Length: 192
Image (cartoon, rainbow, N blue to C red):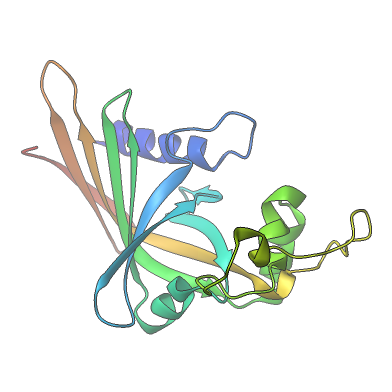
C-alpha cells in the first residue's frame, strides 16, 4: 500500500508541476458546501503538493464564492482523472484560506505573470456583464505594477485526510482507500 500511496502523491505532484506539459492531474474538480447548503463543484488548477505535509495547494480570487464557502465550512473534496490511463484520484480534506501576507506574496512572486492577470479583473467573479470584454482589467501594456491584483489573490491549502484511488485496468479494476489519522496513513483495498 505504501508504493500505491507514493504513486498517488507522484501523480498529483506531476499535476502541480508548472512546466510546459500539463498532466491530467493539473486541473481538479473541487466540491464545497455552498452558502445555500447545496453542493458546489468547479475546476481548480493544482499549484502545489507536499507529501510530507499531506497538502495540496491552489489559488483563487478572494472575492469568489468558494472562498466564502470554505471560510464557513472548510471541508473540501477534490477529484482528478486520467482518462487515457483510467486512473481516478479523489482527495478529501480540510481547506485553509491562507491569510498570511508573507505566504501569499511568496507564492505570488513565484507564479507566472500570465497566471496572475486574472486577479487584476475589476469585477467580482460571477458578476453579470454585457460582454466578456467587460470583465477584463484595462491596464496599459508594459506599465503594469507587478503586484497589481495581489489584494484579490487567495491561496488555499488543503490538508488531505482521505484518498480514494481507482484504476480501471482492462484486466480488472482495482480500488484502494487511504485514511490519515494522527499523521499516519492507513490503506486498504476495497471493491471497485
